[in-house]
Structures are given as C-alpha cells and as structure tokens.
Amino acid sequence: MHYLIISICCSVAVSILLKMARKQKIDIGQAVGVNYITAVSLTVWFLQPDTADWRQYLPTWWLFAALGVLLPSVFVVMGRAVDAAGIVKSDAAQRLSLFLPVIASFTLFGEKLGEGRLIGLVLAFAALACLLWKQESGKKGASWQGAGLLLAVWAGYGVIDILFKQLAKSGTAFAGNLLVAFALAGVLMFGWLFARRTKWTGAGIGGGLLLGCLNFGNILSYIHAHQALADSPTLVFAGMNIGVIVCGTLAGALVFKEKISNINGAGIVLAVCAVACLFYWPQLSALLGR
Image 1 (cartoon, one colour):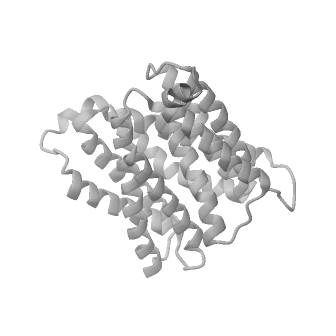
Image 2 (tube, helix red, strand yellow):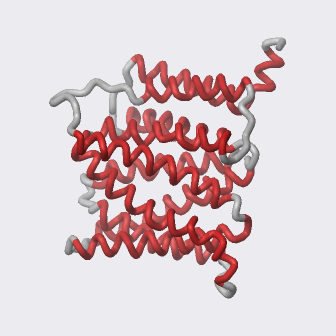
C-alpha cells in the first residue's frame, strides 16, 4: 500500500504545482514538454532498461505506442476542455473516468466482485460525487464542442489507467516500455510546441524539471502498486482516485484557502469509508460479527 500512498502524494504535488504555475509565470505547455525529457532521463538512470535487445519490446509495441500518443494528447484536450466547459466539469470528467478501469478490472483482468469491493465502489462513487460538487457561477450549460471535449477527457484518462495496469503486467520489460512511451510523448509534445512557435522561458524549463520528477515518481509508484496488488486492480484504481481527490481537496483548503462545503465534507467521510471497505473488509466483517 505504500506505493499507492507515494503515488497519491506525487499526484497531489503535481496538481499543486500546476495550480501555482500561472502565478509563478510557468508556461504549462513548456513544463509538460520538459517533463518528458526529465522522465526519460530518470527512467534511464533509475530503472536502467535493457535496450540492447529491442526485439523483446515488439510484442507490446501497441502498449507504449498508445501511451506515447495518449499522454500528451489528453493534456492538450484537457486544456481545451477547461476553456470550453470550465475547470469544475473537466476535473469531474477526469475523476469519473474511474468507471472505465473499474469495469476493466472485472472484464479484462479477471478480478472477482466480492461484497466488500461492491460496497466500497458504491461508497467511492458517492464520495466522488460529493467531493466534486461545487456551486458554479456564470453561464450555465455547455456547447456540443465542450461536451465532446469532456467525453474525450473521460475516455482518455480511463484508457490511460487501463494501459498502466497492462504495462505493470509486462514484468521486467515495463522499464523499456515506459522509456519508449515517455520518449514518444516527448517528441509529440515538442512537435506541438514548435508548431505553436513557443517562446521558451527559464520558469517553464525549471517548472518542467520539477514536474518531470513528480510525474516520474507518480507513474513509477503507480505501476509498482499494480504489481504489488496484481490480483486486485480495483484497489489501485479506486484507491488512487479517491486518495488524490481527498488529499487535493484538503490541500486546496489548507494551502489555497478554498472553502470546503458540507457536501464536500460528507464526501471525505464517505471516501474514508470506501477505502476501509476496499482494503479492510475482512477485518470490518469480523468486527461486525459477520
């Protein structure tokens, strides 16, 4: 479970960095591009993937190709969704993508749906609904373009989660797959930046270096969490999403002085109950005398 906690901490730190980016005059596009260079370097340094025999990666070429394309693409789509539909709806679409990997847990990865998992998932989705609830001001509704972008965010993040689970199953070859995915994502992201004729800044590059370290730690520990809980992907999918949004909500309140409504507070309580059911159902059943 410690891998999952590390991944959650890194993910929340990424969110805080991105939230502070505008105030620190960090160009998000530049930061994401440099982030992939940093991630490639850290992958080579820490994981030391075997690149001598490139043929060992051919059976999983579709995996790193899909991740390499989706990782930067979802970032661009997310940015457009925020502009078209607002940050509240875009964030909700990202978090509710949990639905896709949970379905994949039982259809693709062969996990059995026990009583504890079922109760935990119901509580998890209820917690997400409460935590994502916010009063919106200004114009209501969204255009068809905005709705399409929100759907793309929902599907994109859900598929990426499933692909990371699949990457975790590739065994020792996952380091090489991760390296190629980061490299491909970096090439595509820099192509997009150069097409926009981006003017590079020191703040953008520095922010990208920090973002790359956090992103690498997030993804690596997330994959290790899937490997450690290979037979229970639901625990990782749900635990990660719930953990990130609960910690993100608390960080927003403590660091950025954002208000937590009564409904948001109820969501935190439901989230704790969901995690307890997902991870500790046998002990809870024993305490309840079942």
